[in-house]
Image 1 (cartoon, one colour):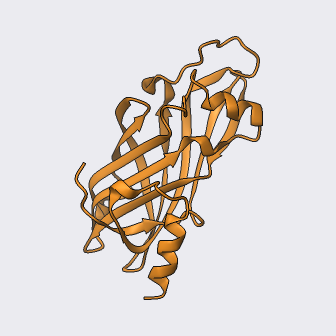
Image 2 (cartoon, helix red, strand yellow):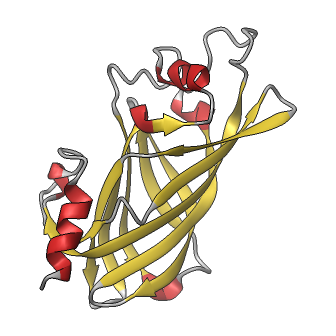
Amino acid sequence: MESRTCNYVLSLERSQINFTITHLVLSKVSGQFRNFSGCLSLNDEEFVDRALLRIDVSSVQTGNSVRDRNLMKKGYFNTSEYRYIEAEAREVDLKQLPSKPVNFNIRIKEIEEIVPLNVLIISVNREKIELRITGKIRTQDFGLRWQSPLKPGLMIGSEANLSIFLSFFRGEIIPENLGNTPSLSSSTRASSHRR
């Protein structure tokens, strides 16, 4: 990937990444990722050249510590080898939202898939961009299957529903530096407010 600088940086404190997924066929489990980073390059408040999101998979929380540990094991996310989920969108015309889905290139482990997601712009101006993303991901498309599906507590569905709120503040970062420090987004937000 090229190292073109983004001009908006994600605020971790003001953003949320939530999901629901079928569990044991009859019920659904809600969860979230607590640690992630992101940035985007906005052109003239109407066109996003590039948007990036990097999620630390080991920060997953579903309200059950045993289940969380199982999600991180080799049979599913395998966080010892694949720490991040990455999503990227390019050339997004904000005037076409929310009527037209945005195609995201999503990478989980070694698999990349194009996934259309709905994006709603909450606010956009020189200092701040806020948006909501909803949609579904077929987990099996990314090779996310349990090795022992009949084991108690390990039955997970093949479709995850996403509900994401992202808040970006004015600031600059090279995309390849995302995720290098958990405090990245908050420190950048603080410096941008002092300008």
